[in-house]
Length: 122
Image 1 (tube, rainbow, N blue to C red):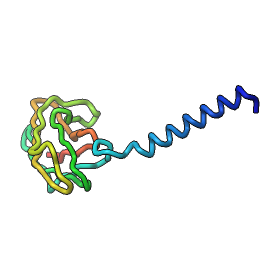
Image 2 (image 1 turned 90 degrees about the vertical axis):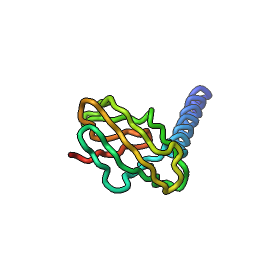
Image 3 (image 1 turned 60 degrees about the vertical axis):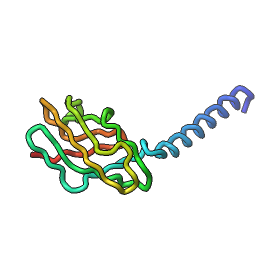
Image 4 (image 1 turned 90 degrees about the horizontal axis):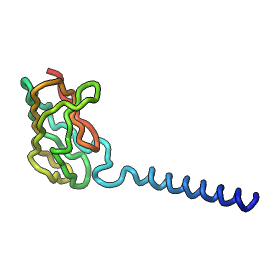
């Protein structure tokens, strides 16, 4: 292999190794874990309001940022509304209240960044 080809080959191997490390570490940290939250029991939907409790299913504390959570319809579009959580820091295996309200549209899930929570149908 000529010197120029060797450099290209080496760059390709470095890129492949870098991608491997990124993929391997992609799920680490509390914002990258799929399915961090689960409903504790069945949430209640009445009109355009939802109330329920969510449980941290991990072995570490997670941060819940209600302002970054989104209500989504069945097409994945954002439904304008307000989400409130009882605690911003949720310890391992702990639960807290979660409520949401909206004026129009039909949300079917809440996107909280590390996963989604399905809303029960009325």
